[in-house]
Amino acid sequence: MNLELTGRIAQILPLEQGVSKAGNSWRKQVFILETQDQYPRKVAISLLNDNIDKYAIQVGTVVTANLEVESREWTGKWYTEVKAWQLTYPQGQPVATHLATSTQPVATPAPSPAPAPAQPQAAEDLPF
Image 1 (cartoon, rainbow, N blue to C red):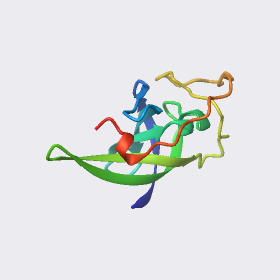
Image 2: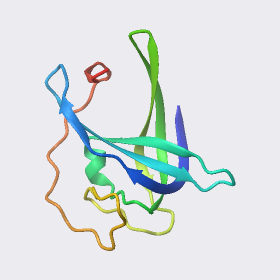
Image 3: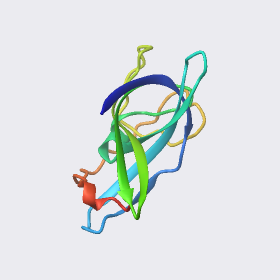
Image 4: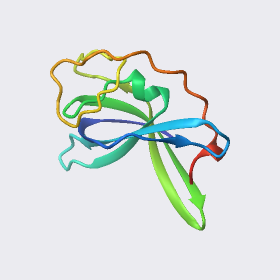
């Protein structure tokens, strides 16, 4: 299922990273997007691997996220994850190619070194 959601980045959670059972490195950056509807909703959205470096996420920035929603069963319980595969900036803000790790708004982003190539992540490589 693919969806599109526009809102303001309200919070950026700490970067998660590890190595799968298959030996592949993975990284996950979760941010909280707050919709701008009459009754705002907050949604936790994940950026995975090279998409973390591809998009500059900063608290207070308005973005439109193209999303993939997926649920998985593990030990009898179901878990749902909302993953962004593309972010666009509807206010004409440029897409930067660095990771903004601060949870405070940043006036001008600082450049970072080029990211290492990411390994493809198979569904069975997830830690749950």
